[in-house]
Length: 195
Image 1 (cartoon, rainbow, N blue to C red):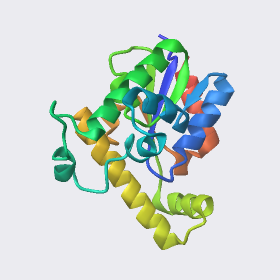
Image 2: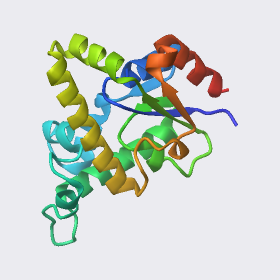
Image 3: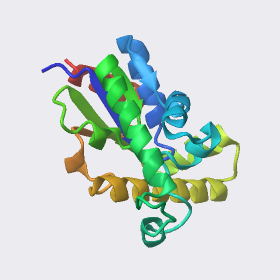
């Protein structure tokens, strides 16, 4: 079956967001990343700024503290409510049109569909550091810190809400090393796999 939905999970600095955007352009389909924050905010009742901070990343604390976050009388934390709103938005987008969805546990949320291609983009440390220093105008040491922090928070969020391991090859259709393959080849492979 042709794959009409592409989800891209990625390591920070691997270029996954850029690759996803280019794939969407080349296929002429919708691209969803930060542009779905307002929809999640609307469904959850939280501000877009709050959603931006917590929708994909765990708070800056460990898994144990994340699990014990403040909860309302139904037992749901703010993170749980945001995740539920995000899940609804992603399911609606997938029903609406062919698209590329970046991060946000979309691979897991859409796991019951057979028209989804789940990609994980990773890279080698030197290339990721170089990409981050160039993109964010930071020193190498700061790039390493940003990478470690962001990936840890993505991993914690993913592992908590999906009961799967972030970055584990068996959770994805395809895992690509953007440092070894280059962005153009990653894009070409993803596009070839949609047919």
